[in-house]
Length: 434
Image 1 (cartoon, rainbow, N blue to C red):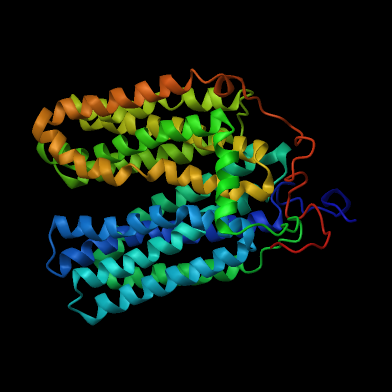
Image 2: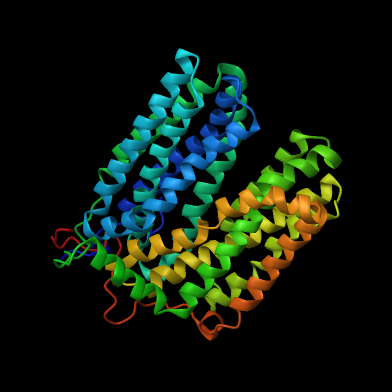
């Protein structure tokens, strides 16, 4: 058997940057940048068609509903079929949906229901893509180098998102939303082509199972059998919901009334994005021994933006708060991916990832819907302080879980862990996935 250590390495890239990892990172860079630009383009496409803010919200929500509905099935499918094929198929769906959206806008006179339908199709594709992609990424690096590899991957993603958002606004103004959506469709096509070259021979063949429902039950047992896992997902189920409501609903209102409008709010969000890039860069160097303890402590600052909006603070202070929050949140993100890579058996990664995704986003639509009534009942300032308090409360609660405080980084895989030597280039043993 030929291993990675037997083959000469190019001095121009790190030892952990294997072929699969490079393909995954390049593809994610393309789609993340394109998707961020497309978010802006879709909103302006709705407004350009005569829609109002409510219609923009409907089109955005149309993506979330199928994403939540199909995530668990997507995780089971990704652990049953070759993950790279699931990813390529999902990219093809997103390419077609965004291409049709672009054609609809460029042709003129699109209807809201048509845009909702195409956006929902993209959300369904994302539901199958995300668990497969996370499982594939987690199996593409060796345990010793996992933290740095995930940090670089996330830095590429966050940098692409930051650049995509900036370029998206400029391109919408220059050439119109239809062409930006067309560029996003092309990005999905190119990313799918890159992902078709992924090598899955290192992934053990799956034993025949009892069907998708049996796979879901097995994934559920894996998920609920680890208190640190379901505890952190429960924490972020609440935290993501209230922070999402604060950023999407209250933030623009505070910016309009106290900061000078959309421009200053966009600048603050840009500082948050820059902070996430900085946090990922930090994690290429820092390897906290207690993964989840360090990561969870870095979630407390997630309450600061809501508190800053509640005061409200001047724009300069808000930008500083947003940057610091981005840095600390990325420390959690890298630590979390490293913990999943270290602790979850390879053949169950996608199902566990699906439960993680599902729990983390399930309450977001509800929080968005309740943000307006909460403001009417309690006032905007009290609602924002409530958001901050909930983040602090759930983060303090998850620290009561002993495994969250005690889980330690390992430099060697667990004995019997099926993700052992899981670098895409580490083994050339022939095996078929699924």
